[in-house]
Structures are given as C-alpha cells and as structure tokens.
Image (cartoon, rainbow, N blue to C red; front, side):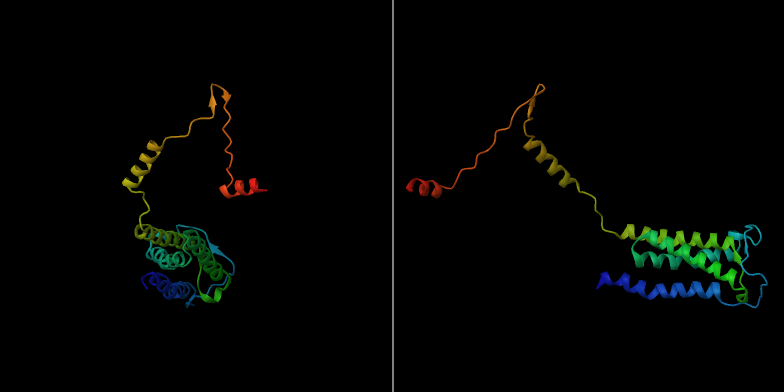
Length: 183
C-alpha cells in the first residue's frame, strides 16, 4: 500500500497543477491587445525575473514540472513537457489577443527556470529516498579473498610458444561397455 502512495498522489495533483498553470496564464483580463502574433523580446521592459510577476512565473511551474517528473519517472520528460507547456501558453497568448495577455520572452525564461527547479527538486528527493545500492565492505572483502585464494588458471603460453590444452575424453557409462562386450 505504501508503494501506491506516490502514483496516487501524482494522479491527484498533476491535473490540479496543470489547471493552475492554465488558469493563471490563459484566463482573460480586461486589457485588450490590438496586435496578433507579436511577443515582447526585451528582457528589461517589465523587470523580467527581478519582479514579483517573474518570481510567480517561476513558482507557477515548479509543481507542474515536479508532478510530470513523478508521473513519468524520468526527469527529461518533466523538462520537455514543462518547456513545451510554457511555449504553448506563450503561443496562445500571442495568437489570441482577446485574452488580454501579452506574450513575453522573460515569461518563457521564468517558466523554464521553474520547470528546472521542479524537476531538480523531485529528482533530488527521489535520489535521497532511493534505497542505497552501495556494495558493503564485507561483501567486497569476501570476494576479493576468494579471488586470491582460488588463484588463476595457469597460462597457456610459455616464452612465446603456445602450449596445447589437454582435451578431456568423456568416459562412457559402465553399462555401455558391458553391453558392447556381450554382443
């Protein structure tokens, strides 16, 4: 039952995290933008990562990327999905001006940083909670002693000359010889 906790928690929290991202980034505002398909690329125009909005953009993607990593079990999947989700949100903001949202490069960068933070947090926690797979000291000493005690087979060569190995001849079972002699 304890092994089922993480998948159940992920199945419950992943849709909630994705809904939070979509609600925070694609809900309509009172602002109306006239241009379609334009994104702001100036990083210094609205403060970028130094403003409260930039910090919130980073924090917004931490749970979503973390849950995606837990769901897939691979950090690369969480990173790819987080960056793809951020790029999709910015593309929708650029293509639908009726939302009143502006597409900004610093939002994409902040979301990507949040993605890496969420994936790093989950990957770090998985590494810390994973059972240790280190080889213990007595195991190593025991096998090293076996190698030393058993030794190695003698080499097949002596001073550049190859020494042939004796070919073992299998002995037939005792009943076979007796049957052959009786004929």
